[in-house]
Amino acid sequence: MNSQSKEPTRRDFLKHGALGGLAALIGDSLLKVSFAATKERITLLSSVGLDTLHPYAYTSGPQYGIWLHMIEPLVEVDYAKKQYRGVLAESWEFQGTRWVFRLRKGVRFHDGTPFTAQDVIHSINRIKNDKQSLQKENFRDLTEMQAPDDHTVVFTTEIPNAVFLDRLDNRFMISKAAADKHGDQADQYPLGTGPYKFVSWQRDGNLVMTRNDQYWRAPAAIKEVVLKRVKEDAGRVAGLLAGQGDVINNVPVEELSRFANNPKVRAEKAEGVRMYFLAMNVTHKPFDNKQVRQAFNYAIDPTVIIKHIYEGNGYVMNGPLGSNVIGFDPKMKRYPYDPKKAKEILAGAGFANGLDVKLYFSPDRYPKAREVCQVIADQLAKIGVKAELVSQEFVIFWGREGVNGGKLPFYYVGRPAIDADTVYDQYYRSGVSKRVEYKNPEFDKLIDEEQKTGDQKKRVELLQQAGRILMDDAPLVPLYTLAEIYGVARNVVWKARPDERVLSVEMKIK
Image (cartoon, one colour):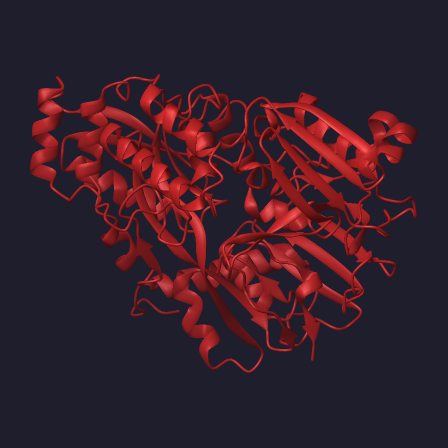
């Protein structure tokens, strides 16, 4: 290149970065565009992998999707109908403080042992009691479990719990017999009832799974699944374009044009259920001050982020919920963008000269998190707030020294939900988690009431009231939901889901 050459463009930079990421991914092998997927094997290039083989040390959507290949829950969400349907449970009945589940018969674990009510009780007990479990809060009000027979489980709660199905979503069932046999080593050989069996795993490397030909539903069309963790967006895109992978997640919006007329790959989109927001832990200064939290709401304009970073592939949240979540209030409006008013509120809170904060984010977990947080920092600067950006790997960001340990005062996060109760209970109900440490007796009372209410219309009204309290107290700055964007080889038949799960059992090769 001579001295007269122009400066590299952003796209040139991304392309060079992509090739570098791809080289790291495939080593010295020759780059060539070809279909990798066959009925024998499919390769998934994912921004997130498994950090451990502990099945309950997770609370994130994509990782749930990985586990779903091997282990299964009692129920799952039907997003089209916004209701629950059975998986390992065939039917259920709400009886006040009791939930009675009838289990599916004829289901076997990968080693051939039958799935029974004792496996359910073992799994839930481990979720509740294991020190490494990040899911135990879902069953904090569960007082008793009984198995009248091998295919019936009765859960008893302290008070009537109308949202118990929501608590069971993503709670996977594992084998009691395997735990009895292998003890503490049982997790090294994940055993479930799912469509794929565990073969091997390397931390930050490959997870290999093979088809379960005795699966209780129709066996998967594809025999083997290889999941490779590729953190860099550019590396995943390059891997797909070079035929080294078949499905990738978190496709950068600026890469979509490369897929439009490509004979080998296509883009798949679905409106996501993940709600992105800025969380403010109210036990940390200055976020213990309601006026500061409200000022931050007036200072942030998410439409700029959607337009310039996501190229229009997003939807502004007008409250703490996305529009496709049960409990959404169509009458609610977000704080208007008003930097002048934000500065006035800050001055009234004693910060006329501004303040310094740290904004934490995880670039390997949320698409374009760094760019988003830079825009947020720029907007906060207009009201006299200097925001230092702190980037952390997701395992640190999300762990006990991060979000789940209540150690981060101010952070950018995304949380999927089909029912408002999930996110309201987990983030804002007193004493449930340390993520925000928000406490409001009136809010807690509303959540208590909706969780006892079998009347769905009444439940929604209560959730809407709770949402209005949150908007006034402002322990969060709601931002947007996004389109979930995937890159898919054209010989792979698959439709994107709204919940970030990439399930090989739903794929076919043409």
